Length: 81
Image 1 (cartoon, one colour):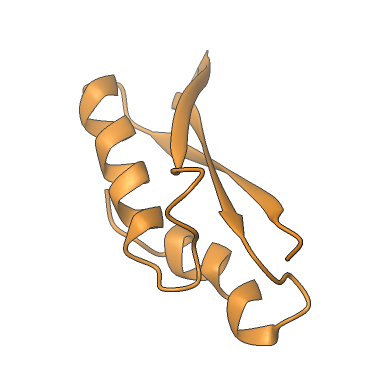
Image 2: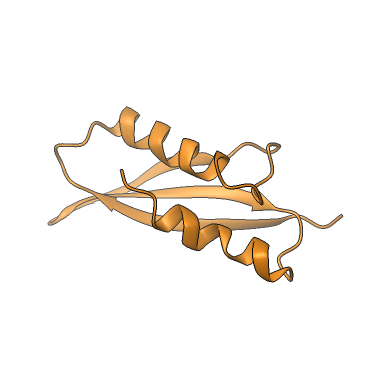
């Protein structure tokens, strides 16, 4: 079964603690049924910008061609931090 990695950039305000953002992003990804448990979702800080800090959440799905699994990124992007 072929796995596909999905990465999504997410911007958070400077008042958000990085450890809390990491946890929220990984939890949001893990809550989506189409996201694989292994490898586990991960989050990283990308940069500090003028309007906030940009993070990246990375997660894996098993079948990118499946239209329901492609929705995983949309569901995570809509998750409130």
